[in-house]
Length: 317
Ligand SMILES: C[S@@+](CC[C@H](N)C(=O)[O-])C[C@H]1O[C@@H](n2cnc3c(N)ncnc32)[C@H](O)[C@@H]1O
Image (cartoon, rainbow, N blue to C red; front, side):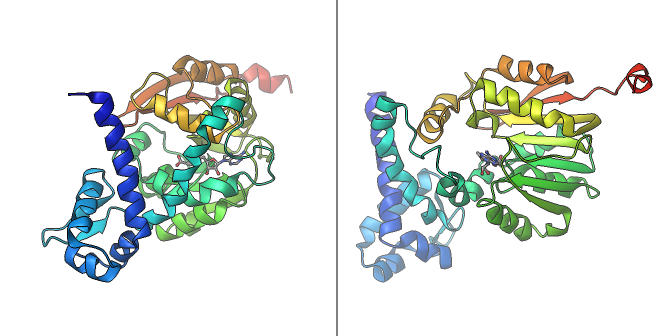
């Protein structure tokens, strides 16, 4: 059996099935109410056999699921919103030739282009791994989430730590999506929303017991990743913990992740584990730990603790 042939036809077939379901309105229709292939064929102007095979392929690809009564429903609502991401890949040959990503990094609001659309789906990637990640983090009351997105980690954290309050920092054009996710979770009173750029927004010094930087360091190259961790560390309270959650180089799924970063970002990369250790140590953090999460797309939590200032440092003030 030819694996390259299968891999290619499966990947192309998945994209085509998804695109067909969007274009014929099948996904929108089952967003409103689950339906069986016969009903869908009638309402969307298609053949029943065609609808049946497309939905079966989408079920195999994890987009939809079939209920016991034969009707289909999407695994998440609003999946059709991801459709505009497909043609972005047409830009890959140009990006490989020129080194210029699909989004103009100099545009005033590069975040407008992709994040509001993809946040919710990104947040749904991790399933049970979120609870596993949260269990590796200390109990904290003041938390800063840097590049908050749809808050997959802190929503779960808030539920486990009822006294916690989250400051969600993200680009101004992305924060409405963040607010929506938090409001859907019924947790708006536990959040403060801070619009800004992670590289420049002023942060109160010595304030947060926990800073979470999830899937953000990989948007930057090694030197800017290091600079980001150094910039965030002064905002940690004494003994506070900074947690990076990201894919590590060499882990399953990391090559495709790197390809996507190549297409979307100026210099983003899946970094080596030792890069993260180095950034945390260079920022003056200690007790560095790394925990792999049990996910298909491998992702890890790396933490470092800000040391308590020594008595002599206090005396020298
Ligand atoms: C890959 S998403 C991760 C979101 C979330 N932390 C998660 O784990 O699902 C990256 C997030 O970083 C935000 N982001 C990217 N560049 C940023 C910047 N320069 N300043 C602030 N936020 C930024 C994006 O808007 C997006 O919400």
